[in-house]
Length: 80
Image (tube, rainbow, N blue to C red; front, side, top):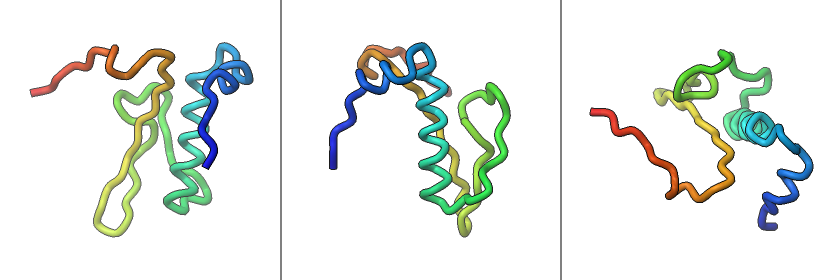
């Protein structure tokens, strides 16, 4: 398996890294779960990129973010 060069990704999608990364993740998610016609999605849906899908008795959703910094440098809200 070849390691991803994120500098090449940034150069190719200059200024559009976030949307391009989300699209890549969407395509991979659809392929992984055999969603050949795609998945319903809403623009700017909080916390999830598409509607969850149901596989057998399990509901599955996904979230994608393209960070240029280490994930450990981001502060996340804790929900109680």
